[in-house]
Image (spheres, rainbow, N blue to C red):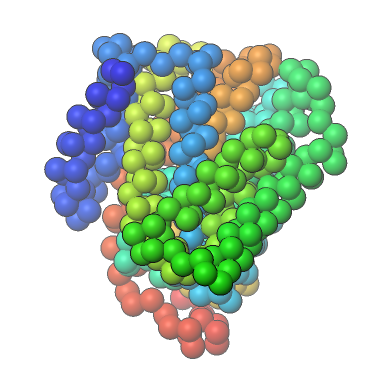
Length: 399
């Protein structure tokens, strides 16, 4: 219960500082991460979190699911439906290029094997919807850019999971899953999300069934709980199910999504902050001592070269203005998805798993510091008016 008490105190401090943080470079997510580090395993030890326990894995998993479900509600509700080109290109081109560049950096700068380096590359390739949401909720962010970052961060977590599982199996930690098994997990997650939302959408249209206004926010919660539990029971990708299911429900029942909106945003903020506190408590100074100088260079390559190069390449020829492309290239924070997959690696017991997790954790910590401290600056730079649909449809010239 110590961690709950600490979370309550830090949350109260964050609430009191929320207005200051909104108009300055102060980072509330960073506040929770620092509190976890200071009070956790590497600090005063008030919060005890074990690497081999289930707390961190469950917290990271639930946080990802909740944030993906909440963000999926807004994809169709707030964004232009025709602007799907950039996020699809970011997923199909930007993410593989980013993973490949990180793989080459790890392989060339450390003594890890090529397969292990590829595992690190895939673990660090997704962007984190939990941290991206801090920028997306600012009014200054144009709709097209919000669409790109929201969809990319919402889907790439689930797409990275099969690669992580395959490489862990190749390294000998578990039986190699067949390709059809992985495909079924992905497609099954999508089908589960769409099917669950369709069933709920049909039920609320049955004659004689009317949802009272005060009960409307509970309908999406019921869907989320069903998707999460069913995904686990059937071994389907519950992250894709969350995002796709929320998008489908938003298209079928916008009134339910509007009613769920305030609660969903507050809930996702709560789980995000709690997850960062737990992750911070997990970190110890001894992790850094296991890393070589090349590993620190990998951190810089991951954040300043691999992600920007992958995104800028994927967005060539799109209608996004150059300044928005640069923002998308920079704002690709690494967070709970990478932590969760890093824990998979740690628990799988592959060779040098501790070193892999330490490298992943270092990248995440530096990313949290940099990206949560620059979202206000990025938003101010985008303060110019969002282009209207006519501008988007006619194309915007690169400046």
